[in-house]
Amino acid sequence: MKKFSLEGKVALITGASYGIGFAIASAYAGAGAVIVFNDIRQELVDKGLAAYEEKGIKAHGYVCDVTDETQVQAMVTQIEKEVGVIDILVNNAGIIKRIPMCDMTAEQFRQVIDVDLNAPFIVSKAVIPSMIKKGHGKIINICSMMSELGRETVSAYAAAKGGLKMLTRNIASEYGEFNIQCNGIGPGYIATPQTAPLREIRPDGSRHPFDQFILAKTPAARWGVTEDLQGPAVFLASEASDFVNGHVLYVDGGILAYI
Ligand code: NDP
Image (cartoon, rainbow, N blue to C red; front, side, top):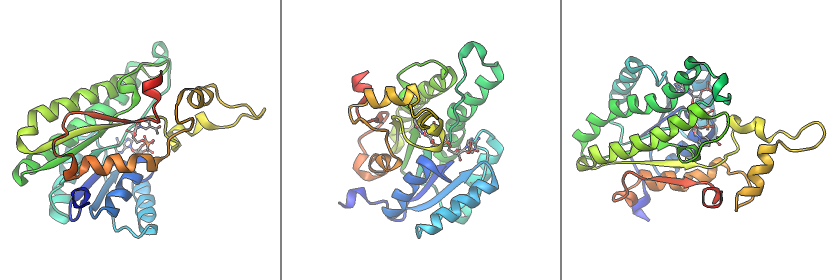
């Protein structure tokens, strides 16, 4: 269906050398988009470029710390010069620190808020003016089930992802009149390096209690895979979602409906 095509669109996916961002970028390339990504270290960008090349995707990679407004502005200016105006932004880069709240330092809390909430603000702010001039834009914020829930050890992450849900709504209401749609995707528990420690089988053959919890509570009875996010991400980047604005689409195998 033509409405789902991203032919010729320039898509910037942050932190997309591997994991969820890489899967989303690969799907965008398959739908015809020109792929631009950044990561925090050269080594990660090189790893990403090699992985895209292996899939036959010609991606443009930049080193940029998304928490640094000066670096982000310079990267966006460079992308506009070298590739073109960004039509689609996916705020994907994220970190998590699993520490009980009372053991967490204020600095550790701030670091999580910086990457998971302040950075989407900084990058969105850098791309919106050109989107307004161009007459359209799509911003997709990678939220989390923790945008809705609280759990032990993820206070900063939940605060940031809850805030990101509200930033999503705010961008939608503030810039919707310029034909900019801003929506979120809330992945459930996805098998990525970030969640690998939770899936390790213990020396005695038992599973991590959290792994057991997920398998028991997810109606789909499995962890998600990064490919599960591709269809929703293409939909939210395409014309097919032009009247969808300010929402978070949870891609969670049904767990939020159950717990
Ligand atoms: P990661 O969260 O591990 O990170 C994605 C990339 O972002 C990594 O390459 C990371 O680098 C990079 N990054 C971190 N900080 C910065 C920074 N300041 N500037 C630029 N890049 C940075 O990958 P995932 O695929 O697991 O997660 C992607 C998104 O999905 C995140 O926002 C995450 O919170 C969200 N999410 C993930 C879930 C899951 O189950 N995996 C569930 C729900 C949401 P480095 O490797 O050095 O940290």
